[in-house]
Image 1 (cartoon, helix red, strand yellow):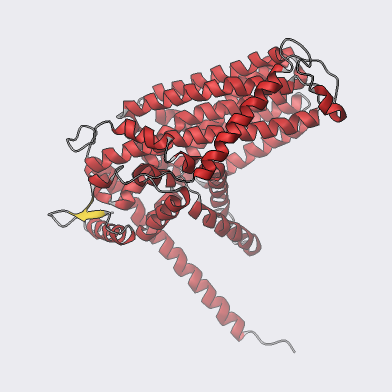
Image 2 (cartoon, helix red, strand yellow):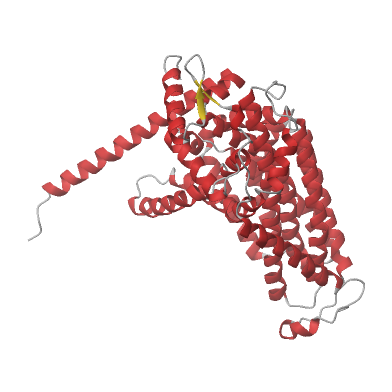
Length: 504
């Protein structure tokens, strides 16, 4: 955006933000709008979404007991707790011990942790190269695993990975023109995160907590893999346990998300972490709020947000490449609007509102989305693919972890490769995801601050502010042009229908 255009956008965004948020902005002496630092992380805090906090706690305690029972039943002795009699209808009578498979999951935990820690260590110097590699290598890696599955006689999984490779390739092709802007946003987010070493320590600590839970989880899963149940029973039980691990991992990732978002928001509002107005012990306060009053909202949002975001990325990428197929476009538009409605109530930007204002999850998600739509920033977010790029890195880390465990399993017991490899892949994804979420939190906070008051970004990095403003201007122009094109097309169609002769 040119210099003459920027002030008008600043005023528009600031005025819209003030109207939308009931005076959260204040006008400075020079007439510009700025966020009030005193409001950040200082509202009265109440416990939110307590029901989901209770559900998660009961789930965690109950699952821990179940995992201990499943692991102990096959630890050093077959059917130690005499529970095989309850699975008489699905017995396969294949002896196995928990300790035969538990070391395989130890490999997964070790590889996933090393990958996550390596990512954090290289965050300041090689993060962009690592993200570019993950985007371009993931398709090849999926294709190679597909070939290995076919070679090993696993037709279903070979087809599944081949489809995954195809979808990944099509998605990258569909968003290739967006990658330069995406990498710019990620580069600035990395810069912000790298300048906050305390949030890196938080990510390391939460990876350690997740690793401790995975010790218990993998103990139970190893007992399931070693159990006397048939493959059908084992697979159903592994799916349930994997869904539980996914939820637990998402809760820990989003807890880090809330902590990092709160810190980044504070730094941007106060003009730097060394500013005199920066509140003392801000990291401790953010951590305390995340694991107490806001933890229920984190548990609630973690159930749905990741799945809805992934579906939205895929539909957006597919929608942009449909062309003029009216029937297919109509179906995809229906799905698109359905997912957009869900995004209104389940989006990752809610966690910034939770961190800063202590709201419930649905309230935060709705306010964040209305803020973006009222300021036009939603057009920029729709163009950005940073979340998808980080997800690709997470999936690649999971695949590497699963491959390492799967190769060792192949040499020990080849009939359990897919079971161990797929669950080990999930472990690796969660551990690497805990490292990736640091950057994602910085991205979301940057967008929230830009929507709340663009001058916050201008004060932090004027060049980046100009690049974002220019990109937003272009996206709004693009949307206006498409809207005019659709209206013109509809008018021509209506005129054509009116002029068509009626059938006799």
